Length: 330
Image 1 (cartoon, one colour):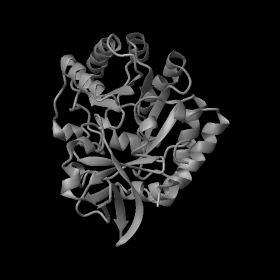
Image 2 (cartoon, rainbow, N blue to C red):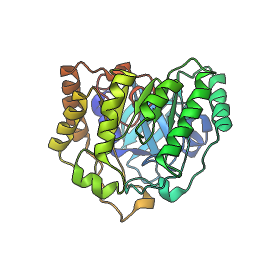
Image 3 (cartoon, rainbow, N blue to C red):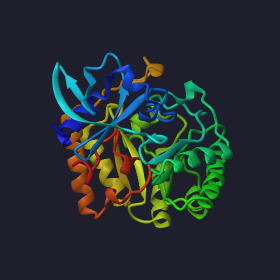
Image 4 (cartoon, rainbow, N blue to C red):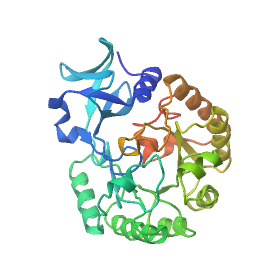
């Protein structure tokens, strides 16, 4: 059976699978994200029926991955659910060099393990080398950059501008950037050669935002997104919107409509609790039914505003591994 929207929603709602060690150790087929809520957790990509999903490797998951001739099969409760293939990840996801610049952050968003991981900060030359390695595979279609905040948002944006400039001088592929915005980051990154920008609102519920993202400003992010659209253009600005922090469906769809009215494409990102944040935040992974309901409602809102997420060339929208993506999955 090939994957469809309903099967993918089920897989995304679970978010993990028990995968055989012999499959997992094939390094080109696994990825360990170093940014965002999934940082530090090994995962893999599965593709079937034109849909793609990223699942964390978890021995306790109700899903199990087994070999099936030249492909693999996902099983739940002893019954086959879907067959397909494992898909190579270049850097974090297939077909993109999706790289984290600073794997540490001075802010303390309660859903994110990065502040507790204290990862490395990659220098420009290391980034150039990693992109060149991805280029040699013949599979590189885009470069995507994300980052924590090692010292200040201004220094982080400045670092990204320098790296984007160096990459643009060497590669003729789309470049996407996800970073916390400064007053001039959109202009600076566009001038440096960035194709698309993503500033994450995380949640459009002000009370939840103030509680889970202390020290950050939802108003500043929204203003930055609004300013970014005339700079990058329609269908070139997006924002991650987390599902599972206690927000209502009404709040989600009102937030989706508000972003869409600004010509910003919302990305509804289901979240799972991270072990490093145990006890700090109450997270509930959205059900498959909720994921489909919100994705289909989001698609209708985007259609009304003539927004096309399938035009995106970088970052999460073309990857689709973590989300139910309008125009691609539903």
